Image (tube, rainbow, N blue to C red; front, side, top):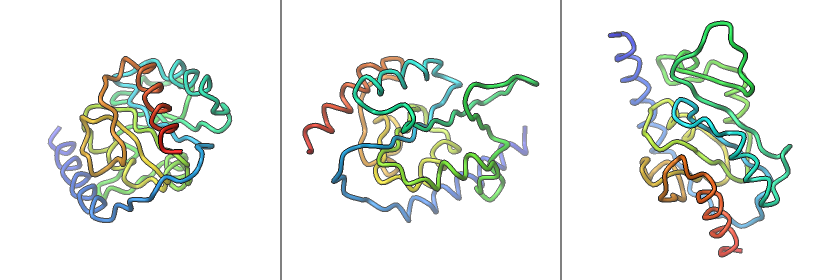
Length: 170
């Protein structure tokens, strides 16, 4: 327990250093690729969220998702790439290959689908090379370029607001 507290402290320190290097890019093109970072500890409707994005014209093969879970069940196969606290080291570096690949991909849009500030999720968001980042208004405003004020369970409203804003800036 104590070691987890110390690790959390160092991850937060790394996150704080990353927040000083945030690039604010201008959104100028149509959204073709979406990265989806979901906290599946709190939200279990990832498939429905993806289906909602597809209904608005995003091709399913252009949506890449990674999920965070606080606790893993032993010997259980997860349907999507899933990571946890063990996949971030003490220095705030990502040790899992699929998560490194996710953060290095230049998505047109990264959706950070979590509403509670967890340093590991915030670190992955800040390290992402996505052109534009979107999340909930309850999370630190330095991480995301856009924030939508709704709750996690209301994913249909979240997606409709997202595409309403995307249409207004074209």
